[in-house]
Amino acid sequence: MAPDTVLAEANTVKAGAARVIAIANQKGGVGKTTTTINLATAMAAVRKKVLLLDLDPQGNASTGLGVDRRDRRRNSYHVMIGEASLADTVRRTDIPGLDLLPSGMDLSGAEIELVEVEQREYSLRRALADATREYDFVLIDCPPALGLLTINALVAAQAVLVPLQCEFFALEGISYLVKTIERVRHAFNPDLEIQGIVLTMFDQRNKLSGMVAKDVREYFGDKVYETVIPRNVRVSEAPSYGRPVLVYDMNCAGSKAYLHLAGEVLRRERRHFA
Image (tube, rainbow, N blue to C red; front, side, top):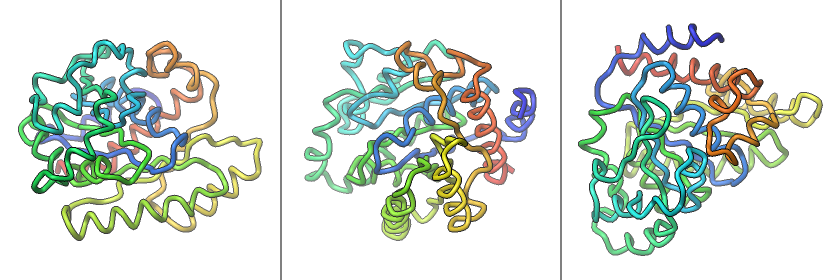
């Protein structure tokens, strides 16, 4: 899909209250943060107003957008516990149309502190309530765990995007996430849906990648995006320069794949803006 085709898809999505999408997988190293950063960048590139909310205490999404750890004194932790407003904590990035709510190591203690809070599962939803009118999309980079932070993201979101690495235990791992999504839907958020599953780190030279992709598509059907994110050196290099791969190398295979993915996500979002 060419950039002008993605722009055409974006123009069919009307502005209004933001669509909140959680990017989640309890397994680490599956391309979750990379997907969040580059999907947010691709959406901003086609004139959508996007907020990337870094909810992972490791703060890799913040680093990948060039925000130094010393510049995160106010972060998503302070918003979660009510010490700061979203408006006062969000910061602009170098990418027009893309804002960031950074993470900090403080966030690792939030799960313990929130245990005593009434309706603790709704802390993030309350924090986002007013700000969502300012954006078209809010993308939440969840931690690699199914704890209270991820639960908060799922309660705040309308949809979940699941990056799934093309490796042997992929289906076994995702079953736990699907069960968690179902529990959250029944207990807290009946509007929550799986927006899609994106296959990441696909190596066409490796037969296992093809076998896993085939199994995932047979099991989840049209929930799996057509776009597959390949293993790509430029994608791996970009975070060390504090840049999304779409900025670091627009013409590499990884960048083209994330543009394709953005087009698919926007097509699936059409029905919510009709």
